[in-house]
Image (tube, rainbow, N blue to C red; front, side, top):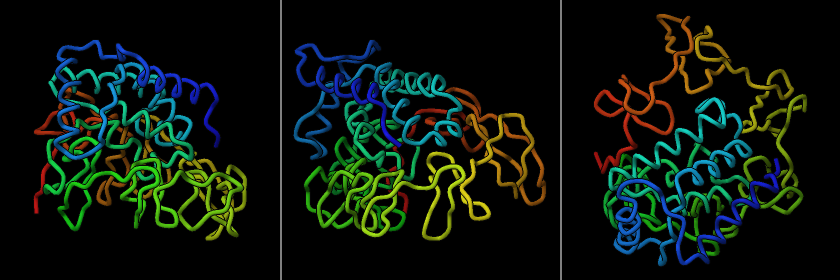
Length: 319
């Protein structure tokens, strides 16, 4: 799946403006100046990036991130948000609420990560941590349980239930595994690199999100109607699954539709199926959003904290 020229152009233009402007794009939210200042201080304290990129305006951050998600992982867009408009609205709200609270959302890092070719930043999760959680306060080598605990430019390298904050490895840095490389990069031949593109030579885990390494070259994953087996996978991020030897579109259910605990269908539009083994039939229920009451889960990117949907929280190490 190719990134659209218009999206890449917008990303490049945004980065150029950020790099060259003496009056960088700033959020029109209360406490924005303090948030930008905090970002610079936390970068230095955490030992992350040596330079701090200026923040991206909340609406621009939301638009660019959601467009990247739509092109890289349309299934995640449908299941977690339902539509591009809802995604942009929620991420704008997330960014605004974080900055109004005096916290920092590293929008510049997010935009850089999701713009990288190969869509690797979206592997394993709808959004990278930099796109959905405030910058944490834990310094390098401090205990952590998730990336959101750590400062800008760093992540939680987990060992069991707890881990330690480590600086993300940048492009060209020596690495042992992809998990240590900054989102959007892969560890290939001992160095953090951009994912191999279709038709290029590859190793087992060096291809982008929509490709796999076959016979030493990156080949596209199966689309609708393509044959599939253990050696030829379907493009799951694009919404396809292997059934009876062919790639088929994953069935998505709208909020309010009937669902089953053992069903192959997936609730979409930020809804979930509450069916259980004891009650195997239910309906897809819309997840609550920011400020609403919750039991367990909330609509992406918010989290259920003390019975209400709130900003993602730093958890700290809880062995």
